Image (cartoon, rainbow, N blue to C red; front, side, top):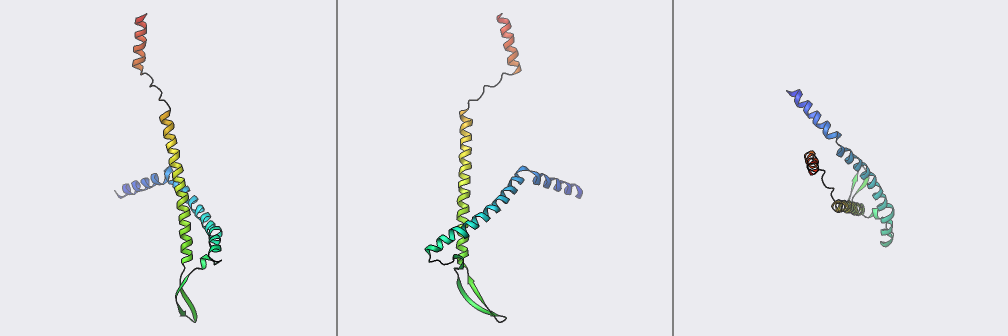
Length: 144
């Protein structure tokens, strides 16, 4: 009995893992990771330097508040709140959310265009059934 459950579980998992949607999702995750790296670079190397020009040339990632210091094994260790990195992460999120919004909007627009084309295309009249064809032939023979 246990073998049947195990075999059923493995079969169910195989069906799940081999579905086309799973592969599509995997491709999306890989592309999303690459896109995240691109957005991180855009934020750190383009946007933040521009912002630092307006904030007096301060390195934005260096923005921090020291909450206190502690001496550990003869070395002074600072407890710091790194809010500059947090602001960078917020900007990354806003950029990524905006791009995803644009992608969803474009996909919805394409779907609407597809629906309109389907609605505009006249439906072909259904082909007569074999019975109707036979009755038509009989009618034509009787007319003769």
